[in-house]
Image (tube, helix red, strand yellow):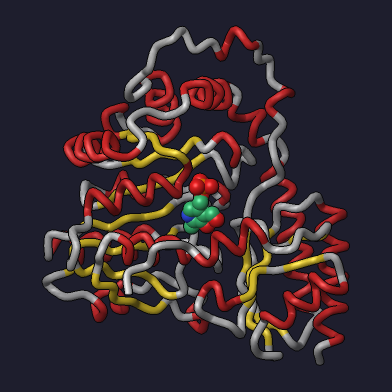
Length: 357
Ligand SMILES: Cc1ncc(COP(=O)(O)O)c(C=O)c1O
């Protein structure tokens, strides 16, 4: 049956709120009122601004592409949807990683794709393995979908593996959609896969690493001909974006170092604390966190839904149960809490794990 909603997104929005929330994959929220913005900067001047050039130029400059390779959209979410809707016709074969961010699966299903899966194996540190991709593909494959960094594990796909997947796609006339919403939290910084050739279509936003989720500033990077098709299709969906949000996004790009602030240091400290936590426990297994905002440990206790239930009911804390990533005996934690809160959240996670032994 074709998907017509996202169970995961509904859960993410409406789950019981908790103080020590390890389920978020956002960096700390950035306060726009710390930037010199006046209402006059946001004046709408009555006009609509199709394909607002200053924002496309700001994104293009940051990612080393030309403005005609940039399509803007409401968050990576809409960027993924517009990209897929442009690249998938009903009945097309689409190959998607497992475990996967559920919205990628459901968007492809909604568009009528015939979905095939390939494994990112936990025993291989969730590596993007081109042989696994090749096994899942056929001559009918039109699109391969991956996340880099991988959500949920944060595994980084190496350039060689990306190139190999690009070659497989090109051989059958397919494209590779790379959701790069976490890529800017890689250490050292990694270039977008868009630089590896026209076969790659990449999406991202100011949401995760930049703490500006509410701005909904997302984008697609693609070769100009494909970008043009995406803009045309978007005329059926959103026509233009909220112009004040586009203006605010330009201001954020102007001050991007300030927006990023101490997020890299915070994430590094939290990852270290997480690695110490994992080392101290026998009931969870997890590859060392070296970059990224999330980790995806395996829990020897089985279905992690009961871990999240206990955390929310008794510890004012929570994780993402692994069922949302089709691996119930894993769970996802995020590193974006303030350092002291993160430490407290881990103490509570440890207590809940002990209680379930
Ligand atoms: C892989 C992935 N893509 C996209 C999104 C959504 O990003 P945005 O807030 O930019 O729409 C998320 C959010 O969790 C995500 O994990």
